[in-house]
Length: 195
Image 1 (cartoon, rainbow, N blue to C red):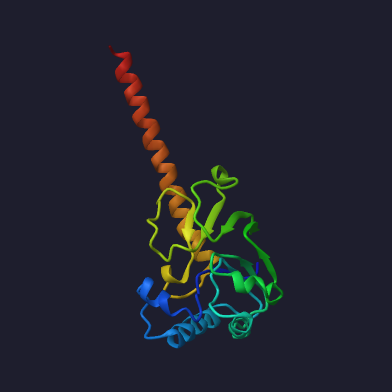
Image 2 (cartoon, rainbow, N blue to C red):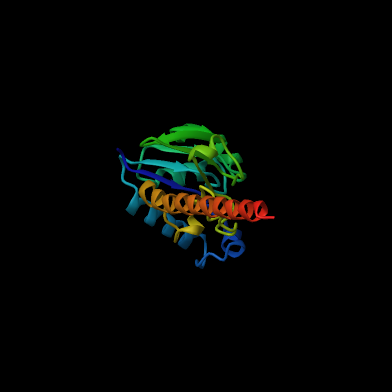
């Protein structure tokens, strides 16, 4: 299996995002360099990268400038609310969509810039990966969803294996919660029968 990575919310060239999200950078030059350095140190040219929206500020030339600094050739782009300009140069990316359903090693995954409460087919173990919230959306420990934005991971991309470890813990917690609920319902039913 090829290495598969997920990330979002670079906001290259967006000075106000530093203040809005309390990013630890003095300016956009420092922020852009850190994100690119950490991305290129992790994701190798033959790997797959899924980017879940909010790439950069500026015009098409700015988008091309930042895209050309990313080493890998294969970038699947799920657009976000700050990607109006990037949409004009979609050809710089391998694929482009607003919502994507995919599989990695038999694991179903739904990709969207935005977090969802339910997604197809969430009840059968499919994950939902999202960005947009910059690590500020409270995580539901029983939901197989996750913020893969750079603000939630030291401005680095997430590898599929790391996400799989987290989702396995969430699935086990969800199963334990269901068992506890069933035990509680059984005890309640038994108590009711004794009257």
